[in-house]
Length: 196
Image (cartoon, rainbow, N blue to C red; front, side, top):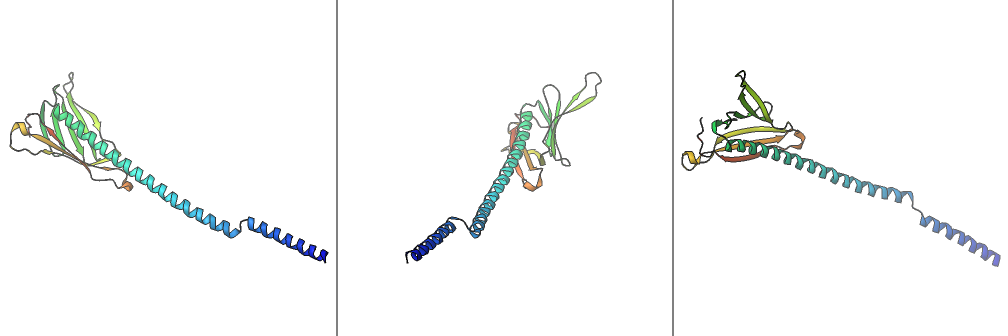
């Protein structure tokens, strides 16, 4: 009887060892479920990463457009403030005469969407005009409009004249959808006569 009990106990002990081994291992179903959960979590994290990269690129592009437009308006403002005479400043062109006798022309080309500063001088030897392009806006930025107009004045006198510069730009890469960034700058003409 003891032998039978020992065999039974041994059998039970063997079965219990098998059962504990089975319980300590992972089943195929558990591994598949855990992989699915990890896959879903990775997909969500990658989507957040891609979204943050897209937002970062968009905000960098918007910043570049604003910086370029601000640079253009600041350069034009500086030239107007330092001018000896403003010969014409309306539409998309502004002509400024400097103390050195150079004629500076700021203009916007609607075809290339670029703002340019050209200095027109005269060659001392030949007497022929020389046009030198001093500044052109970045090709990554499309300047969609540049407008020079008379600013607000309370009464029409030489002391109150100012020029309003309105620049509208967009980013050249269309998929970022950055457009209609507007900057207006009012520049005092420092009591200069504007010849129209």
